[in-house]
Length: 105
Image (cartoon, rainbow, N blue to C red; front, side, top):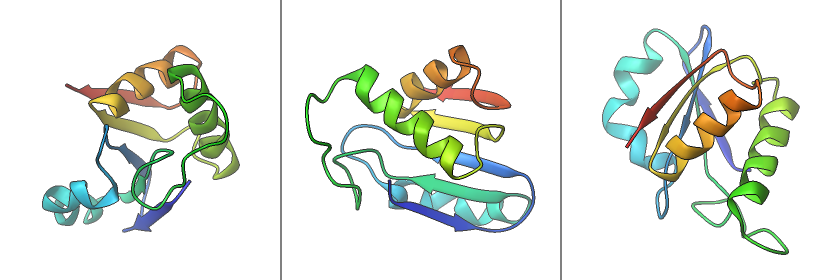
């Protein structure tokens, strides 16, 4: 998954929703990266992350996101999501991934 990291400190992962990408967080980025390492992730099929092969289901996207967070050493990061990203961070919390989760709907 395409990922952008800015700032420094404890990681804060931002996951946008359907039709959105890493750029959607730009209006709040300066304030966040002044205090935290901000990690923005494009979900499969959006932004610079290609569409996955096979079925595009919530479970498949959640599996891909969990694998990505673990591979990027972000399984203990704070997670924030909006829209579909909100549903996914709630799922990550259910799976025990993420230090804390915030769902913006």
